[in-house]
Amino acid sequence: MIKLVNLEKYYANKFIKTFVLRDITLDIQQGDFLSIMGPSGAGKSTLLHILGMLDDMSGGEYYFMDEPVHKLKEKQRTHLHQQNIGFVFQQYHLIDDLTVYENLETPLLYKKVKTSERKSMVADMLDRFNIVAKKDLFPSQLSGGQQQLVAIARALIINPKLILADEPTGNLNSTQGEEIMQMLKTLNGQGTTIIQVTHDEKKAAYGNRIIHLLDGWMNNGR
Image: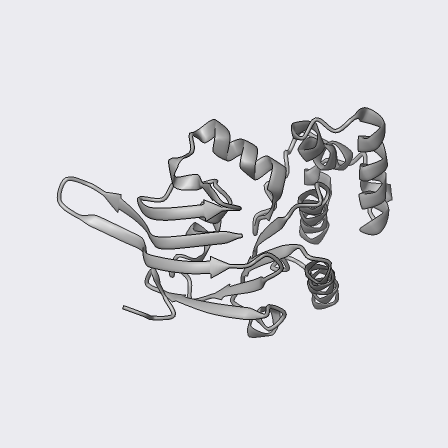
């Protein structure tokens, strides 16, 4: 599903390149549940953003479902992302001036889902996450945990082939966190590929594969 070859990410000025990711070569199969671990500043979130086509790589190759992402134009990458990838951010990234209902509906608008089908899919997600009573509230009226639940529901609503999760349970209490991890595990069991970034070894253990990043290197392999 995903193939990375010698992927690099760096920021350059006239005199020096500051590397965030170095020589990342990785194969991820359809149905994998990959956990990415490492200390702050290791490059975990940057790698996730590149995989989600939200950030550019500086060098190397990235293939997503046989598409050469490193050669695609921004519009093509955006389309590929919107059709196939659900992203759960650590900081929610909900749209402040849209209600919970409208936030959930937004990815379906990008996919041009018909109105009647959209209503049904949003209603299903509201019910599944037990947030029907919150549907007309704005993000600022929700607790952090509630915002994260909405963010996860939004990521799942398009039935994505790939879910990218950046500390998906970071703002939830332990019970909610376990429920979300179990939900991700169930989705993975149904064939959805999941890549999560986490500091938590217990959460990482939900994955069937774990890789470690340190100073931009994978598995400390220099």
